[in-house]
Image (tube, rainbow, N blue to C red; front, side):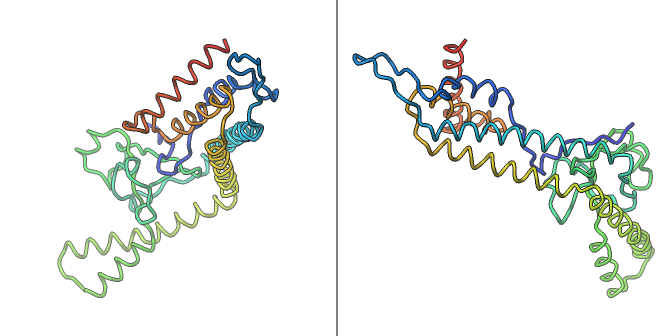
Length: 271
């Protein structure tokens, strides 16, 4: 059974709904020409859409494209380096189901070079897992025991000088795990530095910041026509989808449903 990488939700790499960006916002593309015919009026007045809102829409679209490209670059890097990335030694594996936890600094999950959770084949982990657990579970992601934590525990044991067979077994396990943890952490750091993954992750963060800035600008700027309202609705839906807020109740859910209705009407009129 392979050790499968799974996108790390705790790392927070937001997915951008491409239909929202490219189709939804395109429903307002008539605004790019600079003018939109308003609702019929006795004077047949032509109302211009807010040019700043149009510019913010284009910036949002460009930022979404950049974020998608940056995320794809990170996954490409993970594929390129997968054959070199080591699995953590069984002696330093900690709690199971780390993919369901927050990937905190205190109890880091085992990941690939891109930060995706690694789901390990339980059947081969005979040192760490009981026969019953191995037979009842296929794959899971483990928390990792850090070298500094192991060293601190070993030092505390030496100072306490506990006696007994269980204490001796515990100490031997710590002494065996410490050099393995240090070697694993050194090798994974070497590969991260060599691969340039930090630069790719920085690119993702910059794109995410750019996208958020454009979103806030779209929220702030007033719309003058239905095309502008559609820009705002499509942006809200894209943001909600990226944050996984589609099923929120209350006023947030009402806003989501209203934006969907606006976009549906706009798309129907544009078809």
